[in-house]
Length: 96
Image 1 (cartoon, rainbow, N blue to C red):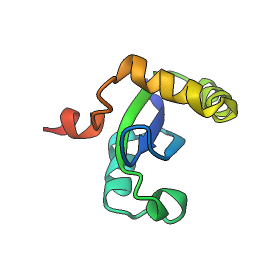
Image 2 (image 1 turned 30 degrees about the horizontal axis):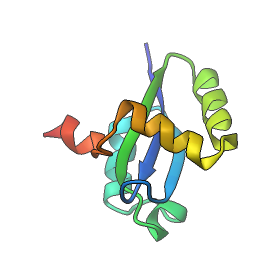
Image 3 (image 1 turned 60 degrees about the horizontal axis):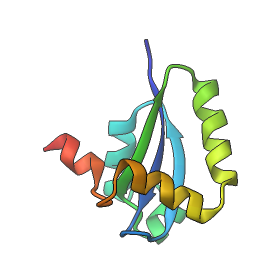
Image 4 (image 1 turned 135 degrees about the horizontal axis):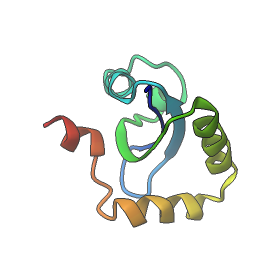
């Protein structure tokens, strides 16, 4: 069964945040790290995966993405800090 992810990127602890959704988190993270995705993430060097959630349905993932994008900034920061208090790059630690 295909998995979908919502993810949050940052450039530093409590820095600029970006929320996205993908059907291939590893590929998407490679694209972000190599600065292949033009726009907001490239402009602000957002390539540290600080939070991710997995879903079985693209519809559920898209709904969660929309929900998170409506959240206030401090709610998003609290979400990251509950699951990743050190703001480690979760992609780097998963791919070591």
